Image 1 (cartoon, one colour):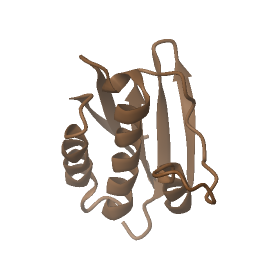
Image 2 (image 1 turned 60 degrees about the vertical axis):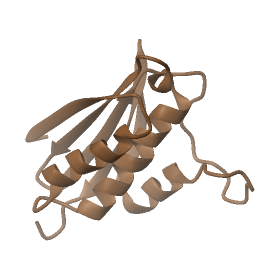
Image 3 (image 1 turned 90 degrees about the horizontal axis):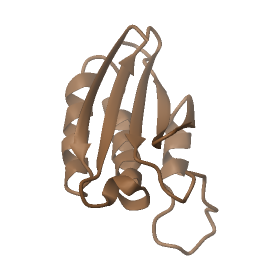
Image 4 (image 1 turned 180 degrees about the vertical axis):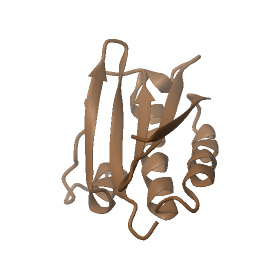
Length: 129
């Protein structure tokens, strides 16, 4: 990565909007804004809903990295019992399709585990930038 930016947010649902604005302001003119906003929205929402980040006093961190041919959007959360995974599209469950959306628009994505949490990242192509 040539450059990286990061910002921590309180682990509250309403902070996902602030994370979207943060990413949009950085990616505008440098990459695929709509895809970047979709990715951070899904990852931040998952962090608040499915990890300890959504507990009282919790937080999540958004990292935006720029390389020559890609933009990496990464959300670091405080971990939890469930591991991020792709859900079955035939499931009647509400939600559960965020990682499928990310897989559809990203060049690549993955999960990194840390001693006190994890991060989920997605690389987006910087075509025409």
